[in-house]
Length: 183
Length: 183
DNA sequence: CTGGTGTATATACAAGTGTATGCACAATTT
DNA sequence: AAATTGTGCATACACTTGTATATACACCAG
View 1 (cartoon, rainbow over the protein chains, first blue to last red):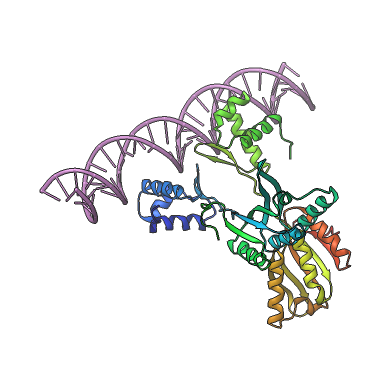
View 2 (tube, rainbow over the protein chains, first blue to last red; view 1 turned 45 degrees about the horizontal axis):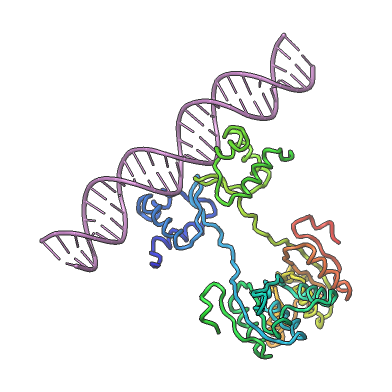
């Protein structure tokens, strides 16, 4: 993918500055080119992933919502450590989306978690205790996977460090990248 | 404000269902009316607060982003309880935006916090300790205010309950409502 | 009965985006 | 030198929203 040209950066900043939409002619005048060039550049910016939306009153830059990065970890620990493990994640601002194990018979088993604060973890642990339910990881002698969601990659790195201090984390990787380059 | 008519509800659900934009003519055909009626209804819906945006390819319903509610609390506790207090908030998924005190001389003093996980609280406490800085609340014998941010009102209610169990919370209210109706 | 009001239809027009086509010029490659 | 590519300009056209205007019809108050 080619890098953004100066004019395209200028377009982005102009759209980001003004809250009201800017017409193609307006942008063209500011950049000293014609509307068609702006249209072309807008198309290129869109192709590059920038969320520009067009209205009958001009172009608007969609406020780029802070999207959560998706990560995955493969961990192994005793059942007594689950609460510590989950709390470590949420303490670092990392959301625990689900838990997943690879069962030799049933294949891929997945359970939704959606834990994002200690209160969520507490409620989850209480449900487990009250229902006398067994953890998914008990099926595979403690090895299981978690899908994580976090705004900052550094947060999950910090959580991993803390867990590695207890020696439970085996692998972690970015869910969107290829799974080959694990840390 | 008049209540939504059936057709307007139909328009909203149609827009909510289809991910791609729907033209006014398309919507008119579905509702069995003309385009002008749809245009009128869209205007009424927009006036009622619904975030419908129009593009050259039709109408789109802006995905109503889960916006954080803003709340404020007025609390009083000893300096040793600050970490407990802050952890209580983040444990319930409530973000602590800032701290604020009413100083008799300087007036309104405000300090940014932006704590959303235990790790953030930990770092804040460490900075306080290392810099030997005094808490803002020390200026007012422990009484201070916090601005909070939370997705669910129930989360802040739960945090308030937990704090009231230790007897520190005096008032809390919704920052957007009038400050008169405090709990 | 008469007039006002709300609703729906039909038509027309302005402004905007998106697309296509043609032309010109510079840079690069063959 | 010739061909290709990239870039910009000009024009035209299809499609959309938004607005204005005129007309028709039902309903209701006086």
